[in-house]
Length: 352
Image 1: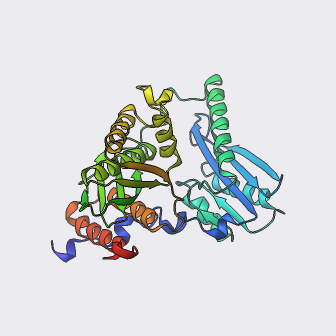
Image 2: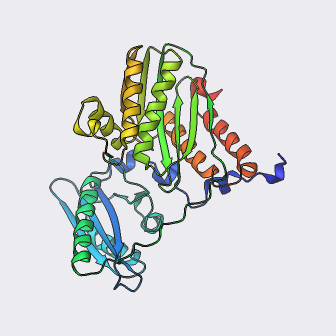
Image 3: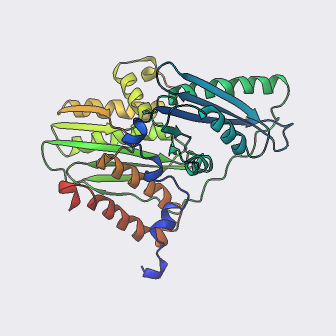
């Protein structure tokens, strides 16, 4: 391939894409005296000038028993000015420093808050004490608004057209699976556009890894479980007696616990918390197969908190998803080179 045909890594990953830096949770954030979580929602609302009703929940945990919530709604096309103003009122007088989490798709709001001098992560983090409350109330307020829209005839007869997925030019798939040693630790991660495709990646402590992309509308939670399944199959194929699999997905771990406990979701043919019956069945079979050979442990690692294997898996999964949006001739060499760069930055044997 001619060098002039290749795109650079900045173009490949996207200037406004989610990045490890904007999602990284630091000790400074965790130790902040006040934690804030902002959860936004929107639904069709035909009498609104722009056809949508926007709403928000701002949860604040300021230490001790000082915890409160601010909510609001608007029909304005751009809800961010009102959300930001409400946020500033909410944090007025609370102890500093303040750590704020916003949704993954709220980059503009996150940037505005960051420029105002606050610690910000661009996606929800389990370490944020206000996160669960904000997410729970968001679902409640959105459900209430939906019921009201139906009652008042505000819900359009036809749903808004589906968002068009970026074109998929090729599906990057690559691996290095030599399988060395009796025990291995594996970090798993996944990425999805929830429209047409997803990417799964695991990186092992012995230097092996696998990137797999495929056409699918499955969300990240299901793909996270599928990646754990891939890791179990890898460990079985390569004869490991002990495998420790780590994921930063709370949803995937909940699915694992439910399946292994034989809960109702495990036995149902329906989707359970966003995870299909097929994905649950494939995990269950891979778990049984490996545990006939050795012992597997599946646990949690804090996402974007500095774990090198988790960082590598996260970056490679997202890289695979992004690369598929460009012609193979333009993105293949850049993608493979970046994977090598990511693995070289890992400590020990992974730095080869």
